[in-house]
Length: 385
Ligand SMILES: [Zn+2]
Image 1: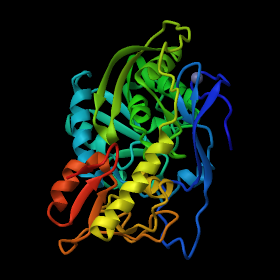
Image 2: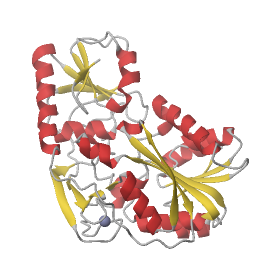
Image 3: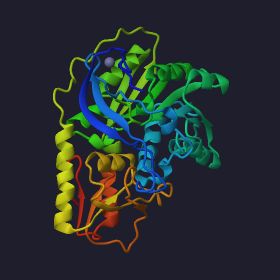
Image 4: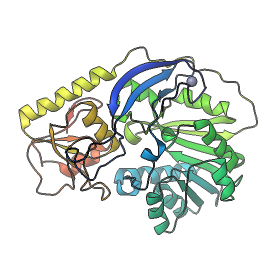
């Protein structure tokens, strides 16, 4: 399915920034190598709305291919992410009355909900993937399975009850963001807050972070385009902070408002050139140079971005294996390749190690320090650790 209208403002003024060709789904971690069973690929392109500047992917794969009961991502298994959410819970606590009621959608296995509970809040989650929601329920958290819609809130008796609704790196997964923000409004008490964390679209474009672009990430907001979107949907700006999450994020807080806002387009932020193609070529050359100079190359971190990196740079033949510590991914394969995902052990040494999960390079490099001939990240630029 291909959308032809901007998800934020509805305009048809979409300009192609880069065509990535047919790519597999970043969230698919196959149980067998590509040689035994090929995976589906879908066209992937990045476009920008010339009216509101929102960056977006227009090709939408079938929703059942994206959200399913084999979702291989549990936030609580990523130590840096847990630290991020401890900090986020403290940030929210400073803006809320004691005992406030909080709803998080896309709550995954409840990594933030658990922190909010520890701070004395009543926190409830909604998540579309039942297997990760069930992990949270096993820890005693209240997580409902479903998409964030007015229907779901009505069915679960959750309308108009919350002091704050939040979501972290979830908004990008949603096709109909207008319907979702309507559900946020319906969940909130008058004057309630909506706190949202998204990848920083401005940084993504400036650094040509191609490995962040995948079918499951449909939109990339900048501060200006997010502000205009939310004001258009009945919110007023409270604050916007930058976070290091996932290579650069925005933490945006808005308050429910009765004031009507016209849709004022951001004055700047249009991308005039495509830096993605050149960056992909440079990264592929970096990987081949590492093989020539240091022998076998291994990857560290089997994240969605790692899968896109290897597929977009056509370097599947370069990687012997990819290390990952998540029990949900061990024993799986990098999508569209025969590269196994294995746990890192103390015996692993030699050759080159490329930290594909470069947003966690600091903690990963400390973990594997001295084990390889060279430890490198290639995004956002080449760096040895
Ligand atoms: Zn637009």
